[in-house]
Each structure stands twice: as C-alpha cells, then as structure tokens.
Image (cartoon, rainbow, N blue to C red; front, side, top):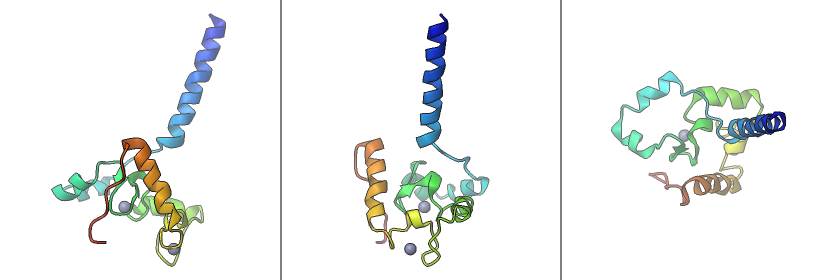
Length: 117
Ligand SMILES: [Zn+2]
Ligand SMILES: [Zn+2]
C-alpha cells in the first residue's frame, strides 16, 4: 500500500511537472476577449495557435502586452523588431520552423499560413 502510494505520488508529481512545463497557458487577459468579437479572428484563432505570428497564442508577445512585459522582464527582447528575441523570426529565421514543429506535433499538420504575407 505504502509503496504504491509513493509511486502514485511520484507519478502525479511528474505529471504536474510535465503539465506546467508544456501546457503553460497563462490566464487569458480580459482585454483579449474583446478581439474575439470579430467572428473572423475567432475562426482564425483556434485558441492555442496565433496564426498571424506563427507561435502559440499563450506566449505571443505581439498579441498580448502582458506577455510582452514578461519577456522584457526576462531581458528576452528584440528592441529593433518589438518582440521577444526568442520570437523574432527576422533576426532568427530558424525559430519559425521550431514553432511550426510544435504545431505539427500537436495537430499532425503544418500550421496555417498567415494572411497578407
Ligand atoms: Zn500573435
Ligand atoms: Zn529582431
């Protein structure tokens, strides 16, 4: 009994760690809800992926000023392009493929192309 309890605890701890590690979705800001009023943008955004910027919505500093502030606090910021250095596809074109791979791992297909470019 005790041994099983111990293992269960370890497993759930691991699970919790994994979940906080990759499912790290910050609370959606109340102001973001207003943007959803446009039916079109709601259709384009599945809630996880930011089609426009090619990265997960939860860490999209270009969509959320709150997220942007967090990256700035970590000194992860490209002043030239007004986005986190770790999300700057202009300075680091290879990052685009890295984020696209995350999308592909989740949905089994390539991320949709942003419109207008
Ligand atoms: Zn975005
Ligand atoms: Zn840059």
